Structures are given as structure tokens and as C-alpha cells.
Length: 315
Image 1 (cartoon, one colour):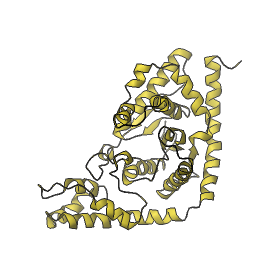
Image 2 (tube, helix red, strand yellow):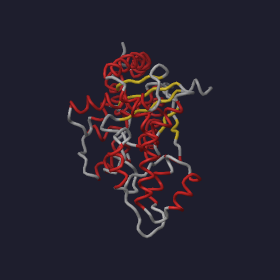
Image 3 (spheres, rainbow, N blue to C red):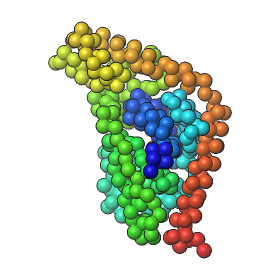
Image 4 (cartoon, rainbow, N blue to C red):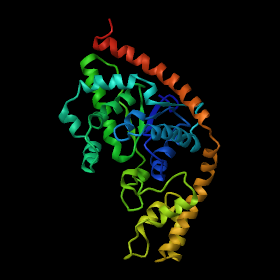
């Protein structure tokens, strides 16, 4: 199978403003991959319901995340951008997978345990999340799923769901592979932990320069060293280590100067994408989603017709 034949599937929850961790961990690798692969980008709006209960905010977030996709270089004419909720086969297949896996199996999900430990409500949707994600991936005969290292288990769960179904009902689903870019698999946040909205340690992707500056100035620095490691870890996403060597030698111990240099480099990088994003209208987004939903449903409905026949509900 050639690269152009390989199908890639990925998705983002419309749960808030994107940050540079999303860009380097998911959006940039995705944009690069979509140049040589068949690509499906799903707006995971049903997944967002595990924690987001504000309808107006969800609608706004959906529009925003599509603008983000397009602004970073995803071409809607060469890929399929769609909302999860526009393809009901996702939730239908998730129910079938729920009936094939055990409660102890789902209890091992790292994301579930991590979120509950952080105080997030342990609702049933959060618990069965991996099977909906498995359905998302498997409906499209996906070959490759770009994920962060911490999300690798999601793809493992999808493979397990595929294997269980195939064993019970006959060959039906491909077992997808994850693709992890090790060098940017976990993007550090302003506190040195993984950059995440839930940690409150993000640098916004499309915010104003002032907002970017405020986030950078909040980066936790180690006062015992000559090089602020948290600043450097983020900085090398935007410039090579060779390019940064002279700056960090010249500004040794001058943390404020180094943060200001990082602000300028982030702004230079983000500004063209931000300008492109500002020119995308809500109506253009709705058109992209409508066209994407039609393409996605064509694939998903064919797969579900086969699934229904195999499980015995089609007469």
C-alpha cells in the first residue's frame, strides 16, 4: 500500500481554545501527513460532552476548531473534516463494542483514571469513552492514527475492539497503528508538565501577542541553573538547538531576556496563521462541515451495513 492509499484518522475535542501543545503534538504532524495520505479529521463533539455542559460554548468551540484546522494548513478539499455527531454510526458502533468488552478492561484506561484522580465526574460516558473512540477510528478502515505518547493506549483499545469483533463475527475491521513523533510527543507546559488545558499551563495558539506574552512570562524557571529548562524546552519547538545555543550562552542567567526572545519567536511563527484564521467566516466553516459529513457518512454507513448484517440485527 502506498502512502497516498494509507488512510489517517484523527480528531480533537472542541473543548476550548487550542494551544501550542495541540499544534506541535497533533496539528502540525497532521498537516504534514495529510499532504501524502487520505485524511479524516473529526470534531469530537460527543466526546466533549463528558465534561462540557454549556451548549453555546460547544457551538462556538466547534466553529473555532475548524478554523484552527484550516489556518494551520489543512485543505478541506483534500481531506474530510466532519463532526462526530453528524455521523450517527459512531455511537451505534460504540454500543456494539461496549457489549464486547468487560468493565475491568475499561477500568484500566489511563485517561479515565487520570481524569477521575483530578476530580472530574466519573460519568458513564467518560468510562466508555475508549469504545466510542475505537468506533471513531475503526469505522473508516483507518491505517494510521497520529497520537501523543500519552494517548497511545486509545489506539491499543481500538485494536482490541477490532480483534474482539473480528473473532466473534468474522473479519471486518482493520487493526490501526499509532504514529508517534517522539521528539514532540509530549509538549511541555509553562510548569514543565505536559501542556494541557486541564492543567492551566498552556500557551494559546491563536491569541494576541499580549496574551502569548502573559503566558510565557508565567513559565516556571529553575533559579539554580544558568539555562531555564522549561523556557528552553518550549523554545526549541520554534528554533533548532543550534540556533538557540548562542542566545542561551549570551543570555545565561537572564531569564527575562530569554522569555522575551521566546515571545518574539512564537509571535513570528503564529502571526501568519492567525491572520489566515481571522479571514475564515462561520458560513465557510458550516459548508466545510456539511460536505465533510456527507463524505464521512458514505464510508461509515457502508461499514455499519456490514456490521449490522454480521451481528444479526439486519433481517
